[in-house]
Image 1 (cartoon, rainbow, N blue to C red):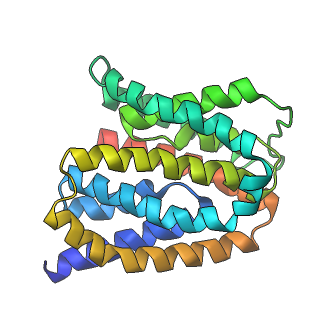
Image 2 (image 1 turned 45 degrees about the horizontal axis):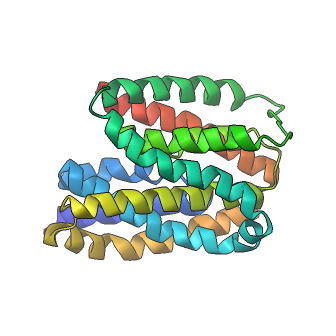
Length: 247
């Protein structure tokens, strides 16, 4: 392992860890570009997924009270989401994942661009358990089919006038558990070989430290500031996905 590889692994882990600590999602968007310079796609995705889980557990811990206070809210997203992952993998045989990712990117850009710079943020306060479950299911399907499980839940939760901790108490554990499913599937595909494990050892310290810095910034945000951050992050996700697919 040379100096260039170590540098890109550390930078990717730091970028991904920070955004994970700050927003509870978006790790791959900020880290994957660094990893793909020095790793093949399967190993790069495997490292991003596992780093997202490890950094995300820190974020889950800081909102554990809110998770326990509203367990039904979290579960109605999660259970359909987990069921959606294998459905998404099955869809890979009949759809083009690249086309699907481009369609998702356009949706995220339109949403993030429209709401991200408005003075008044959208507010959808009515309880919608069946719709929430549907969002979770589609998030899981998109995670299995296109690797973007957090995109639709992020967009939907940014509409909710919840506190930042309530929002994160759904989004963060949803992403962590969907990604644990992804990590498990990648493990059985042989993605975590000696090269990947050495890369993980290099990346892990900077990723965990950066996640703590992101969590510190998260704590200083207002509830409205966090909602605006999620909306702008959907815009960034859309641009990042579109660029990766077209170029």
